[in-house]
Length: 226
Image 1 (cartoon, rainbow, N blue to C red):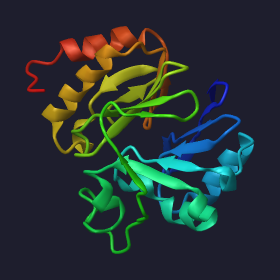
Image 2 (image 1 turned 90 degrees about the vertical axis):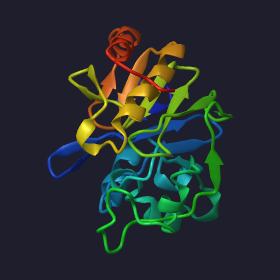
Image 3 (image 1 turned 30 degrees about the vertical axis):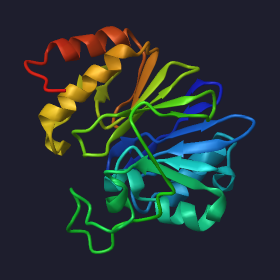
Image 4 (image 1 turned 180 degrees about the horizontal axis):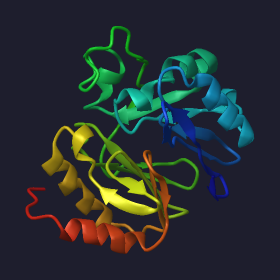
């Protein structure tokens, strides 16, 4: 699904579920946000080729967090792209992504996907890619979960901080969230942004009255310690 020029929401199917990595590109570079489940590399390559950006053209991968459905194809991407692709993530999730610590929700995996993280990012940092990408540290789902605000298109890539159903934002997904209260509080950060559309990894795009939808979710909070 094309959101605007240079922004493509990918669709990858796994066990009946659809997940949504995001491809962003311009004349200077192409980057991928999140990398699907293990075993989805061929499907990911196909989706990128449909968008006209073969996987070998990637110059960056930004990981919103450490969960296996977000880092699954990272080893294959690194093998294919070599040193010309750089990986970005928050420092709190870096040791899990690199395999120094077992994944918080998938510690049972015998051979979890892993790969280098070249650069760690912090809350409020602006990456000079594709018109500017603001990093929003939005912990709760995992300690190092980040969201990304595409400044030119006013698009929020929410990762797993929210989910959506038929274009309606559903807030925090309790069963997969490590710290529900912190995750709810993280939603308050989105109130500071002028958002035209939200892309949730689970549920895809929401673009109708999203600022009002987020405001409603935040007003439903009984307590916030942030």
